[in-house]
Image (cartoon, rainbow, N blue to C red; front, top):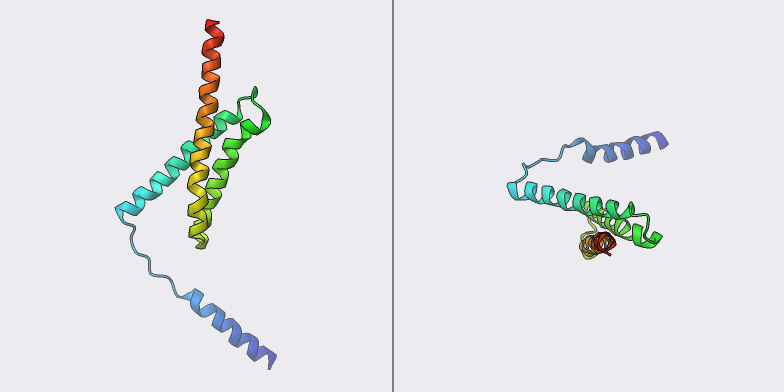
Length: 119
């Protein structure tokens, strides 16, 4: 009896997986959105990595932009698990904060370099 039960159960589990999902072609708007997300995410992480290499900064100031950028990327990936509301509320502010912190540190370093040469 146990063998018949296991066979019936495994047959039920295999049935939905054996049918392929119909795949529709992506539209140009979807492809543009994917390219923009990867582009913006790349810019955020590149700027944050530049700040992480500024060894004259305090530890938390060096790694804060990169940490915020990675949190934003993680929240964007959570959208694949259908947690869209949480991901949408957290991802964009993390990206924006990461870029703002990184730009502020980059500009601060450029100002110090300029004033150091002049003064």
